Length: 116
Image (cartoon, rainbow, N blue to C red; front, top):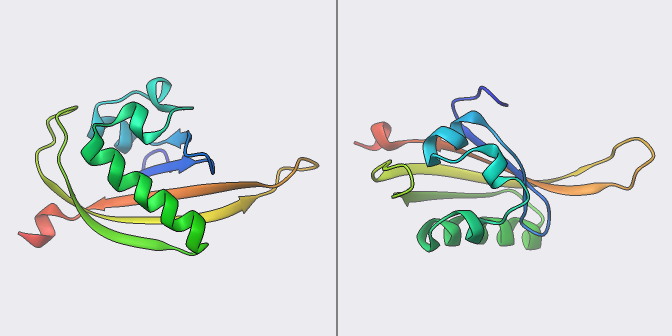
């Protein structure tokens, strides 16, 4: 997951990031240490936070995979306008004798060049 060309993140049900990959870091110009444990509204401008929060909310309440095509631009890393296909899904992870944890996995592919 770390070296995937797709943006990948994992959040807990409260919306706090538990993992981001290198593509996420480079695309948004954010380091993992600045993201882990924070929510979308704590790290992104409102225009981006709203997109990711809606995906998170939808997947939690529908309890099924959610897919969207979104145009995202960011002043954080000057990415310009990019088109992403974003997929979010929920998964329950069991770790030995510990209680199961529900996590939300999101991946996004940059489709900008495919749509132009």
